[in-house]
Amino acid sequence: MKNKVVFVLIAAFLGTLFLFSCRGEQEKKTEINSQWKFVKNIDLNNVNPIGIVAQENFLWLSDVTNNRIVKIDLDGKIIESFDGFKRPMHMAIQKDKIYIPEYTSDSLKILEDGKVSTYKLKEKPDAIAGVSIDGNTVAVADFYNNRIILQQDNKVTIIGKEGHNDGELYYPTDVAIKNDLIYVADAYNNRVQVFDFSGKYVRMIGWNEGVKVAAGLKVTDSQVIVADFDGNRILVYNLYGKLLQTLNGKFNQPTDIEIVSNKMYVVNYKGKSLAVYQK
Amino acid sequence: MRILLKTGIITLLTFATFILSTTNVNAQTKSETDKTYIKIEVDGLSCPFCAYGLEKKLKQAGSKDVLINLEEGEATMSVPKDQQPTEEELRKIVKVAGFTPKEITFSKTPFKIKQDEK
Image 1 (cartoon, chains in turn cyan, purple):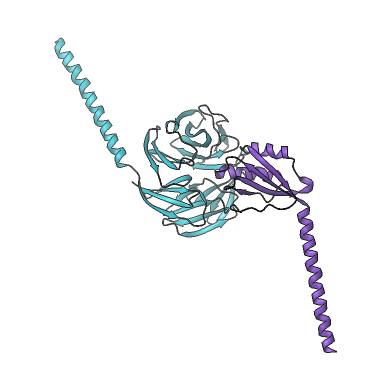
Image 2 (tube, rainbow over the protein chains, first blue to last red; image 1 turned 135 degrees about the vertical axis):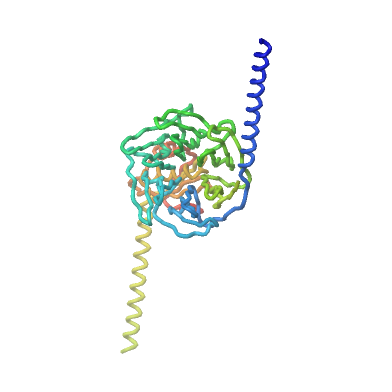
C-alpha cells in the first residue's frame, strides 16, 4: 500500500514536470514564430517624425521640426498635412480623433475631419511629450514635471514624481494605457515603468538591457515594444518584461512604433525614415 | 520742353528711390542695434525632447526667434536690448531645461549659423 502511494506521488510529480516542459517548449515555439523580421525602409524626405499612429491603412506622423501632422500611405506617400501645431510629439488615436500633444504650448489638440480643437486638461503640464487614450481616460506624459497626468472624466490622478527609484520618473516621453495598466517610457531613467490606475508601481521593464533613452513605446495584447533612442535599437518584451527580441542595425534615433496589418513601423527621427518589420 | 519734363521725372524717381532705400537701411540698422544676440553652447542637445525643451524655456524668457542647432549643440536667439537677461539668468534657464550650459556669448550683431532647425 505504501509503495503504491509513493509510486502515485512520483508519477504525479513526473507528469507535472513533463507538462511544464511541454508548456515551456510551446512558449519557446510561439516566441520564435513571433519574431519580427526586417522588410524595408521608407524614406520620408522632409518629414522629421517623432510620433506615429495608424488610422486604417494610413499612418499619421508628427513632424516636429516643421510643426505639422502628416498623413501618409503605407508606402510613405504623403496624402495630406496639417500645419500650425507647436512641436507635436507622441500622438494617440481614437476612432477619427487624433490627439496631438503640443510640446511648447502645453496643450492637447484634437484633429478631427480637418478641424482642430483643444482637450481640456485639469492639471497644467510643462511640455507634453506623449498621450494615450482609452475610452474616457486620458494619460499624458508631463516631461518637465516628471509625472503622468491621468484624467478620467473629472478625476485626476498624478502618477510618479521626479526621481530614480521604483515608481519615480525622470523625463517621461511616452505613455500607453493597456488593460487597466499604464506603461511609461521613463526616458532618462533608461527603462519602462508600469503603474495601475491608482498610481501604484507595478513593475519595471528594460533595466537589464541597459536601455540608453527609452524615448517611445507601443503596447500590444502580448508585447511591450520599446524605442531606445540613443541605443539605436528596438527591444521587444512580453507584458511581464521578459526580453523576446532585440532589433538592431536599421535605426537612426528611433522614437516611436506603430503596428498595422501585422507590420511594425518604427519611426527614425534622425534618419527621417520608417523601418518596416513583419512577423 | 518734353525732354526737360522726362529728365525731371527720372531725377525725381531716382531721388525718391535713394531716399526710400536709405530710410529702409536706417530702419533695419536701428532695429538690429536695438537687439542683443545671444549664443548658448550646451552639452547633450541630441534628443528632440531636450532641444525643444530648451527652445520652450528660452522663448519663455522673452525671445521670439530661438534657433536650436542640434549638430553644433547650441542655441541662438535675440532679445530687445532693454529686456536682455543676465548670463546668470540664462544659465539658470538652461539648467531648468535639463542641460549644463557651457559658453554664453552676447553680441551686438547676429551670429552666422547653419540653420538646421525651424
